[in-house]
Length: 385
View 1 (cartoon, rainbow, N blue to C red):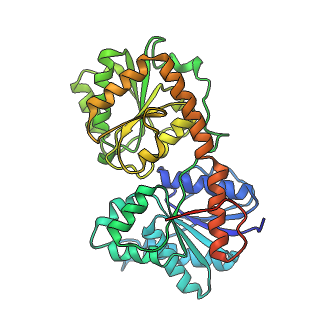
View 2: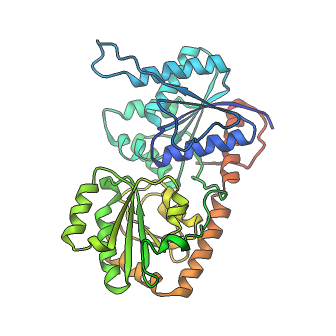
View 3: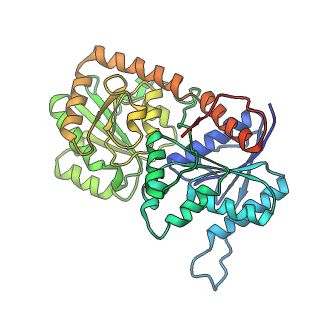
């Protein structure tokens, strides 16, 4: 294997893109590559010191003439500095704006042939890509990258439609590490959340409008009328007060628990019998994959990349966005049939491990790196669209 020096830039706080970027960096380091994270804070999934991983903090100049601290310029400058100091082979940036644009600026500053790989995760296309004031900038970041990847077929289609992109885009699904995500033994503390005869439904998100957490509550209310259940809500965000008020209005306070942000997601998900993910937009649905790897099926919406992940009628059920009645009906059917639930559980574990394994996806990224560098491809063939 040819050892590479890779600079990774991502949003380091909570969010699927930061999780994927950080976990990918850790796996690449395990394989012997040298990984340099260039971000404004340490990625929350990075943890303690690890071999072959380095962190470079982006510090923003708060010069008084700037109305707002120029983070993008500081990031581009830091990326160029690290690339020159560490002799990086390439940047792998997550999100087109600002990170791909910053990589482009860094490359111009360096004046050399450092390569740029950009991964599209969703909102940089599905939200920002529809902002007329940003379209040209996003298009520049994508077209000036040496390779572009996206986490679902649906996101590739949306990128082409929204931005008139014609270049090749590699399909690289998100992945799970089965050393971390597997069914945990939670028997000792499941009783803290539900009685033995009760089922546990769970929702995990950043509580933004696009996640339709109000639909989660509506689905649960319908299910609870037929199957004694509890709802665990994991995460925080702008819609949290609204959801708390709705639960109170519906008289469900004694059936719902708010767990806040949690780091040990596999441990928490293993408590659930079912994950609810009725999002309006979901470019991939990383939390559904994490649940799948823990043997927990998902009831979700036919949104974005979800149909590519969830096998309807085998690893979960999908319904049109906003159809809470159908989602609740599916949930009741699954929770009421022990044989079906066990079949779904086994199918979830099989699909997660075989279709979205860390080795498979990491090899795809390595192949992309070697390809843009003009070196021999050592892993699996990549999927280009």
